[in-house]
Image (cartoon, rainbow, N blue to C red):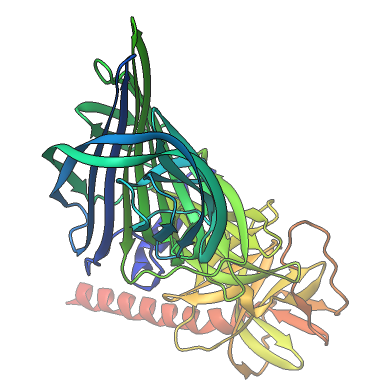
Length: 550
């Protein structure tokens, strides 16, 4: 859609104090809750005819805090521990139970009585993240982002290999599964080395529809990437299904000798609440590598996995309960809009203004959307459809009287010229008068617009409709019909049932049940003005003559 005309931009700017404005930040500097975790895990096996050595290296750190600086960062310290694992060399069958609970607040609890657990991973929406790494734990309390449903992967040390169990999970549910595994049990865990490292946690809130530069480091290997494109979708955040914008990136880096090629994947998901305000975001960076070498009679294998997960929640921002969802494009960018029967709206775009309307007897929401200074107006309906709305500037506005049920009302007669099926226009209201209603002329008949399809805003009346060419904005207490000997334009109409066929339309208008007269009060309004002008002219001429005589 082309950029909105200057008259609309001017109107919106003047109306800013009264508009519903969406922004990622606000003057009140809302606080943010930060959940951050970083786990690395390398399972390294060296085998020879006489000896097998297993080294298991784990790095782990979590950060849980509330911050106020949306563009700040903090530095945290983590430990990296390398264990020497000794196995029994006897294969045993272990039967036990795995209990997993995922909550909407991102917490994840896992319990199991099966030994040798070294990793817990979560696969949700195709993204695999390491959410815990350690050795031989029976109860784990961590956090993870799950987009409604997903899979939990538990990995167990098994001599020269790793054994994986996969179970389905769902937010706000506990899953219990009985499993049976054949494992070489770990006899001894000896700490070989402990070193420390530092990680920088950024709090920057992504700017919607702006590329993101990703970067991370694992075990001395660095990778970076720039996001490519945007995915507009619906996703779960803190238990609510909301519009979300997804950025993705990937990279490949060489990890050095015995670390091989490492594949990095990046994903950021930003979630939007009422009026498109940012609810929060989830950022995940992952890396994995597999190396298998044979040097004569010595074989070396290494299985590495790394994840960095950051979950940011903007405090005080509320989601809406979406009842219908639609899609559109602004300058080629995909946009998701969601609304409900209360007239609330949210979107991946900024929502500048919204109002509940009726479209073909179906509830909808009119929304002014903005991406990078480009404004688009759409109407979203309960049928999960969206329709473009054309912004129209009235060609002419004149004063007129309309008579309804024997009562005459002062009105503004508005002429518009539009060919699209959905329009919106605005007119400055007459001060100190009360709005009675908005009518349109259809096939010689006056039809009253549904009261939901027009509203007052900052001294203007905003009208949404499937267009006619003439509208009448009626005001205040009924007046006597204005009569004059001077000719005036009079339209007499007889009511009948209105019919419309265009799709979509706002055919929620009602025909007036009596005959109606529309009078353009040419002499009534012009006569006092003309008299005043004549008096002014006479005074000016008199003053000129007096000055000449003097």
